[in-house]
Amino acid sequence: MCGIVGYLGTHQAAPLLLEGLGRLEHRGYDSAGVAVLGPSGIRVAKRAGRVRDLSEELPKRFAGKVGIGHTRWATHGPANDTNAHPHTDSKDRVAVVHNGIIDNAGALRDELADAGIDLVSDTDTEVLAHLVALSEADTLEAKVAEALGRIDGTYGIAVVHVDFPDRIVVARNGSPLIIGVGEKEMHVASDLAALVRYTTTVAHLDDGEMATVTATGFTTYRLEASGLSATDRRASQVDIDPSSYDAGEHASFMHKEMLEQPAAAERVLRGRLDQRFATGHLGGLNLDARELRAIRRIKVLGCGSAYYVGQMGATLVEELARIPADAEAASEFRYRNPIIEPDTLYVAVSQSGETLDTLLAVQEIRRKGGRVIGLVNVVGSAIAREVDGGIYLHAGPEVAVASTKALTNMFLGFAMLALQLGRVRDLSIADGRRLIAGLEALPAKIDQVLATEDHLERVAARLAQAESLFFVGRVRGFPVAREGAQKFKEISYRHAEAYQTSELKHGPLALISPDVPTIAIVPDDELVERNVGALHEIAARNGPLVVVTHEDVSLQGLPEDGVERIVVPRSERELDPILLTIPLQLLAYHAALHLGHDIDKPRNLAKSVTVE
Image (tube, rainbow, N blue to C red; front, side, top):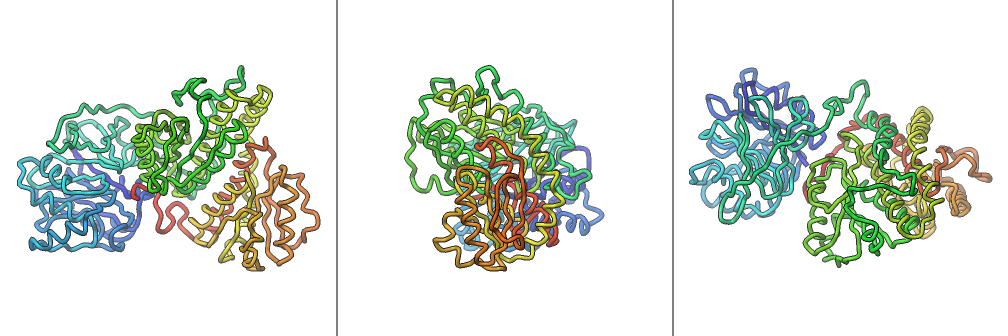
């Protein structure tokens, strides 16, 4: 969940490392540091706080054309200067930056302490620096391989050593690492965001792979019990616009990314709707019509917002294809020893394609012979390379921790999957055409919702005053409520809880009061009367209400005072959830802004969760 950068070439490393760390700060931002290898050896500068704090305190004379850097999201030990990366051995001959978690760090720390080595930090990473320094192997590659042979856990690492001043050695096991190829220079990073200003020619390491990076190129190896064996990893071009990683005129990336949703929705739909047969055209699934028809169950796996949109997707599949479908938190999936069925299609959902819990679930499914596809946004990511097929989201780079445009495209990916599954079964061509028309109309309708931002800002300012809020919905609306609560809590830091509207009377209603607002999702569907009836129960207990609904829904009988109505455009019923979700993004955004919070970098969170 942290950010790694590295540089070798003809320029001074420190400014480039700091610039790269700034672009990776969404990956972790409680501390940052750099290590530069120059004529006088390794020099390290690190401190708790943001990258800008490190930049302000960096010594003026910090020369060296080889270096590594890191921005941290704390796992072992609090955020302080000592625990910040890079970490070195006792003699400052080795410096290491590391993403992931070393499971046996405690035992290794005890072993090193018994050998008389003084460990100065609370981190698991520090043991790696000492293990590399203690190795008697002749090459840096062998030293790193020997150290990694002692490690249980996950890692993405970059290592420099004073005895090998022309190289950085990197390795990956469960945490992403990318090599960028430049002109007489090379870059290393855990995310494309740090590289794209300098090169779009990159190589992604696989798990169990290591690389030596010098200023003129790179060599890759497979880490095996018998030693290192060469691999033929090649660099390739990525099609990406570097300006996508800039906020531009926007006050935050989240605001920029919310406003990009209509264009992102058009991209994910483009070329994937088959008008002739009124179906989806998803060639990346690598499944023909017979194979699709043989599927008897859908299991969706995701974490956080990806899990909640997975619930929306499962409902879509059941409605349109009449196949049993459900969503489950990927973080729990493999720990219950799941039964993997040959006629079940597993769907892994992840914006980054690097979410470790989801990646491990994919690997468990494949180990047991299951078929799994991915809905991911990042081309070349770990999950994208691991699955049997899938749907790229084409949302463009998403930098803000709170996902918006990627989530919208996830929903649209599920809609197209459900449409394609439905059309090989019993979904009529008329219904197929109805849904395609609805999908094509969605970008403009999303734009309509975004145009109500001024009204939503005023509502959000009032909601921000509450210490606790309920979000409620039924059936299609319940995952919308869960996602709304997730957004609100993660960036406003207010307690927000989601419930099925029907469950309020089974306990939570006891908490309704004038100080606890309820945001209710009330689409104009077959449950509208029951939903409105539940709103009366809340109003009778003086609970403030914000109702996200359609224009023709009658709220007659509810008191005018204490009820705020947010109207979204009507779509096809099956597609309504995504339009109902958009105003919840804006409510969370403006509540957090009203409270003075850092929108893009909420406390304790990071964009890509690459630890368990």
